[in-house]
Amino acid sequence: MTNEKQIEQEIQDKGLNAPRLTPDHIDSKIKGIYYSNPLQGVSPETAMDEGTYQNLRCLTFCTIVLENGFTVTGESACASPENFNEEIGKKIAYTNARDKIWQLEGYLLKEKLYQAQLDSKF
Image 1 (cartoon, rainbow, N blue to C red):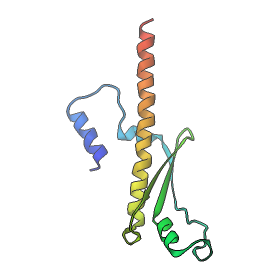
Image 2: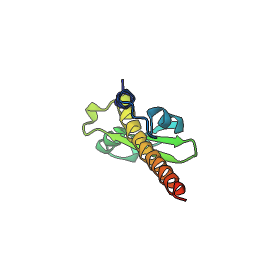
Image 3: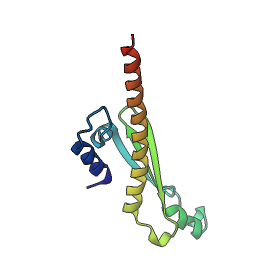
Image 4: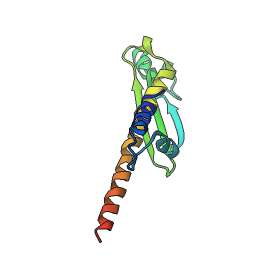
């Protein structure tokens, strides 16, 4: 179980039912997930020295396109090229991008609650 799902379960177990974000809500906002590497389309023989090539090879970007077309990005990089693993890099980059969705959606929910509070005063 992921940390998000563990926290969600704890919130539910405690009966905390006020308006809030959930992992499912965040998932519902995602339209597409794209991974890239700065070396795509670059020939390592002509573009740079071997050290630079190895460092860039270890960098992974994740771009998440939201349902409204807005994009968020995340990245991952390892200090030692020997430790690079593409799947782990993708997971870290995705998590970093996804965390930004929580912030954006949190702001939107807070603004909605704030506006409702203002409307109820009139």
